[in-house]
Image (cartoon, rainbow, N blue to C red; front, side):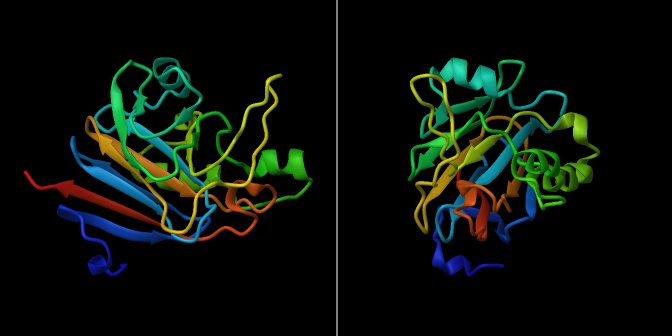
Length: 211
């Protein structure tokens, strides 16, 4: 576990983990709990999914989140909504201000098509490993959010995965708005700039504010 003294948060630390590239993390958060995701070395993408922990058939909906927010990316003040129109988590702190909603997760199959390599570590397999702990599987993976990942959109609708904007120590912090299953994959992608071409560890801290 990381040195908790290096980061003072005003509440109870529930979990403090360094997640290596190619590995995942998951936890059920109670309403009001916080999840701080820290990019330890910079330019590292974190793929993220969330579900109603009591009814995982209700899960993050990227399209509704974008429509309600009126923009294509996540930032402080954005709420991630479920397919039932309910708030799952909200972004309450953010030192980057640009997080992807459209590119989804990498998979071995997509890497084969795009880059001609097989097999490869990938976020979909990491999601499957984490979701399996809660009785969920491939059918439960939907289009996910990508924290710290930069996907600019051009004037003619063109998109690209660009170099990330996050620096060492940048973070995003989420607040659970309901009892939420949070699942992340620390992206191992080496064939595009999603993780700077050199995937590195991130830190996930779940904590509960006092009072």
